[in-house]
Length: 147
Image (cartoon, rainbow, N blue to C red):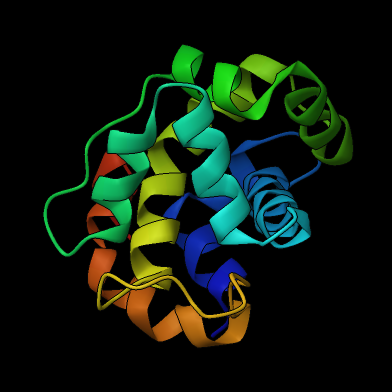
């Protein structure tokens, strides 16, 4: 099962417009991260520049993940990036930041299992699926008891 399949099933995949909108949003987020100059390193730099470095550092580290508010995430990503992701998946921008504020910490955490960012900063979508099995608490965040 791929990362997108795993997250899609955890998130109840068909609840958003056009039936896999949530999985499409996760795909758009992964694409956004990998397209940053430096990949995940670029995203970390963005968080640091916008006053949220401690938050993303908690996701990378082996300790507990700090939560991020949707408003803070919107400020970090920027209105243009949020609007682009929303447009790609056919949802409102407020849905993008709301959902990503729940999912992104787990994605980054799963991509950095030993507290280290991949050398090239790129997220290995295929390789993350096994690691994400360990974060089944995502299902509880969205009330999906079938994950």
